[in-house]
Image (cartoon, rainbow, N blue to C red; front, side, top):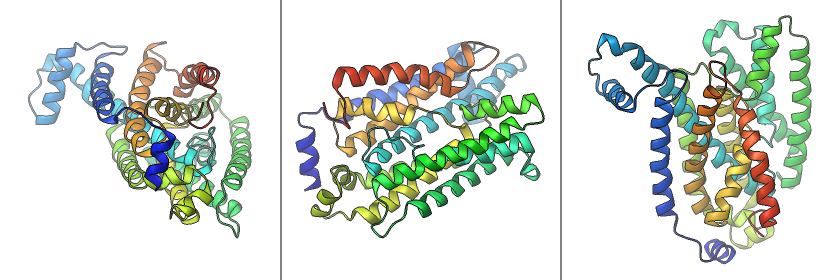
Length: 355
């Protein structure tokens, strides 16, 4: 019955397979372009050769070693992580909008990113978790995200379960509180460069990414997307309202709790490695919904690929527009997202997938 509701809500939509194939090819091309372009440009043929050597353990001429290190050690983990973060934010954005039945929901609506920001800022400004070395920032951000998740859950829980309105209000209120703590930490920073570093991280950055940053984030995103795809039919029902979901055989309370945990865990892992990259989880689901309709099986097949392509190009712009300096990712996603979202609302009269 949930499938029938989804088909009725979005009739005559194109099959997603050609779109998925096109986006997958577009992502592959985007990754290669991002490896070739930058402050130091590497010819495309050399990029492919360096990738082959890195994957097969082949030999590299001494003259080509600097370019190989740029492609394999510096850019490849960064562009792969950009794709992972973009895919994860888009998928969690789709789930969050169904979770709280709010068109303005995104992966950060539950206050997870604000909690992570407290942990990361404490490391940058106060030197907390210094014993963990290079992993201190990621660990502190993830611990902060978990703490925020626990507080939001405890504050929003009621005898009726996790209702959408209580989740949104609690997450928003606690996010303001965490943001205030972060602001105080930055304000009291003894060094100006520490405050600048904290601000840069708060707006999102993939600078300094290395190979160890990739596996955990990739595993979290893959597991999260797999779970959300398995719950696509239930998400169709949940998006129609709790009463409709219950009539279709979906228990909204337990489902909402599971979605809350999954969304918070994936968001926490992503924020820990990239900072708070805004607008991707808000904008991409709406743009994809215009093409695929409201069926979450289609949405969750297309949105992660679209988010990955978007963030790969945003990261490329971030490191090339003012090279050799970098722009925070959040600055560019907001610059792109605000006009696109305003256009979408004005052109479509958009209300959670409607007209």
